[in-house]
Amino acid sequence: MKKSPFWLLGGVGIYSLISFWIFNKVYSTTQQVVDEEFHIRQGIHYCNGNFSVWDPKITTFPGLYFVSTVFLLPLKLCQTYYLRLVSLGASVLNIYWIYEIRKGIVKDKRWKVSFAAVVMRQTNIVWVGGVFGVNVLDKLVTKTLKKKAQKDLNYVYGIGDVLKAIGYYLKRLSSLHIAYFAAFFAFFASGMLLMHLQDILRSVPKKWYLLLMLSVFFFLTVKYNTVVHPYLLADNRHFTFYLWNRFLGKPLARYLAIPLYVFGTISLSAVLGNQNAGFKIVYFLCTIVSVALQSMIEVRYFLMPFLLIRLLYPKPIKFSSIAIELALNSTINIATFYIFFTKTFYWSDYSEPQRIMWK
Image 1: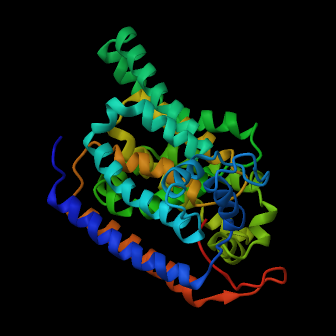
Image 2: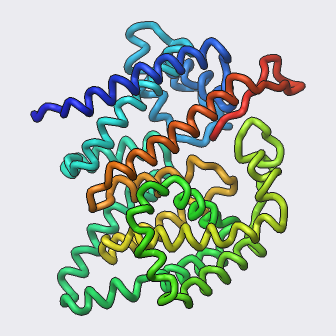
């Protein structure tokens, strides 16, 4: 077994110390955060060995409850603090898994990782299926196509055919948040996009027709497929509530955001440029399905397609790009926790003060 590099151990140590301090600060501030009303209660049932109780309002698989039970039941620590602590421990473990994914070490453990992913969150089945779909397509392409045909296939399955696939799904889905994901990608991948910025700008005059297609597509999406979920307007404990009410909910602002959606899509295509045709096809289809099947605008649904691109990026990433990513994410986290700790309000049917957070 190879030893982990010193920088990884140091990074995990710093992250753990900071996160544990914030963890205790959050716990001392509030005993219940948004959906914990259901999840903590369910977790306590499982932790005490009562597996016959299930809250019908919970739509996720019980993977996290089982993991918490394994660790906490023998120690008789079935309280809110320790149930939350299990999630904190999982976030630390995620750093190690991310390191392994970047190194390609988890290849031989894909079945175990896939099972754990689905048990923790049922929507992960889309991405588990996508991983195996890429393997199947790669084998088919290798066996049936020559090098020239492979080159042509990469061209055919460019943005133009991706738009056709999206249009196919657009007719059948109640909501399509691919535009918001494009904006999300452009913002959070800004550090990585600096490495592609010159190529993106040079390609714009040559592919003006793609810009036009994307602009028309997003215009039609905004006009005919802007779906407002009732919870988005009702729950003011989420940042998306304020983003919608103060910006995206205004008709003019929706159309003014179209250039950002177009830039995000072109940037995503540029980052995917070094991937093979099979990966591009499966990635776009999985992103469409996983994002479009959600009727609410929630940032958490954008994390899987974003992290997949970020972790499987084939080229070395410059230190300056990593520094930009670190600064951007640190700033957002600091602002998020500042608002969480300082901004409170009350709901008529809850005694505890409510706070604003992501979801």
